[in-house]
Amino acid sequence: MINRILPSIILAAGLLAAVPAPQTPAKVELPPTPAARSVEAYFKAFNAGVEAMQGYFAAFAAKDALQQAPIEVRLVRYRQMHERLGDLELRKLVEAKPELIRVVAHGGNGPLVNLDFHFEPAEPFGLIAIQVTDAGMEGAPADPKKDASELASAVRAYARKLADEDAFSGVVLLAHDGAPIFEQAFGLAERKGKIPNRLDTKFNIGSINKSFTALAARQLFAQGKLSLDDPIGKYLPDYPNLEAAVKVTVGHLVDMTSGIGDFFGDRYQTTPKDKLRSLKDYLPLFADKPLEFEPGAKSQYSNGGYIVLGLIVEKASGQDYYAYVREHIYKPAGMTDSDSYAKDDAVANRAKGYTRSGSAWVPNDDTLPARGSSAGGGYSTARDLLKYMAALQKGTFGELPDDLKGGMGIAGGAPGLNAGVEWDAKRGYTIIILANLDPPAAERVALQIRAWLPQ
Image (tube, rainbow, N blue to C red; front, side, top):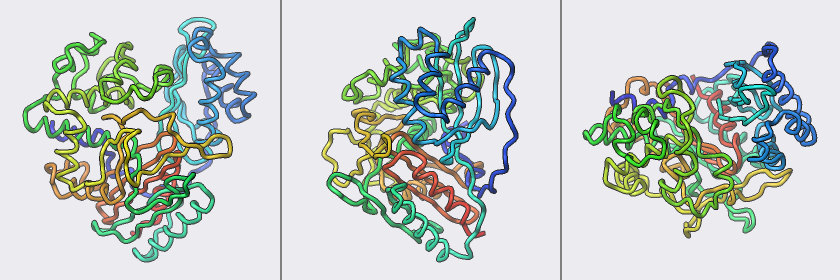
């Protein structure tokens, strides 16, 4: 059972294979239902612009939903989403019910996204909400370089080109058999003061922190301090949702099969961000909401679930979550420049994140909590993350599960930040990209490097 911990959040080797150029997709047929017609109208409006989206929300959104999130709020989200993704193309119908349409779409800027459209269960089947989660990136054509030297030259030229186009700002580190063969910083850590990024600049790594949380749970399981079969109520007896406290287990949290939803949403937007400084501060954003599905029935990405898992780490270990990770993960790995710094801490050489607003890059401060969490938002450097991958591979935290011995990848992204770490065991390469711009700034670079790895 112990091997279930790491695979749940660190992706297996198949992620690292260079993907051939995409073929022209076949047209996706949606069923003749009111919900499906709303989805079709959404894609048309999304690609047409702000005025079209305004008309779409006015025509299709449920009245109660508009009271909770007015059209003006929805248009702000739309602008941010379109800046990141580009125009959307429907690629796959995953599920179709009167109250739910689940699809996969391709953004013109590269990412694939899952879109879950939630509707009223009865006529007029008004749109309640749209849940968006990353599904990866479209592949770059395979073009293996002959050796590490040629690869490094290609990576340098590509990253410089993107930086000159103001499409990348961050650090690229490429290692072979654990030793860096290329590392360079690009762009600015702070635009107002024109402070450049450096090799040791600390970047917000987003959901990569989930890997540390999963590893912490693995350590405590090995010590007999928790069980994957324990209900969360055993550790959190005052958990606001009694059904979740009884039905959701630690294993469900780790595997993201809990049915607990996200903490991002209307409550997060209206909550003063300076109030989010500890893990328990996040609970009011989601914990009282009904489970989205029966625990164990399916897998769904859950930031809320990893908040709960972090709180269980605290209870089982008797330590503050941040202190636990610092002592039991960062210290053994030698990660001296990593921590969940508070937003208002004076931290030397920390990159400021920038998100698109129209044609300009603006600071992402207003979108960030006062402090990151067990679900994401900590800071690290490229060298520290290389140390982390090395520690995993050499068994510092125990034997690597068999399904990860061929390679692994972890990533994080949100407005103003994007990070990715990948290891290809067969070819011996580790790719680390950190960016202080919106996704897919780092993902795009990693995708191209994968296609260039020597055979």
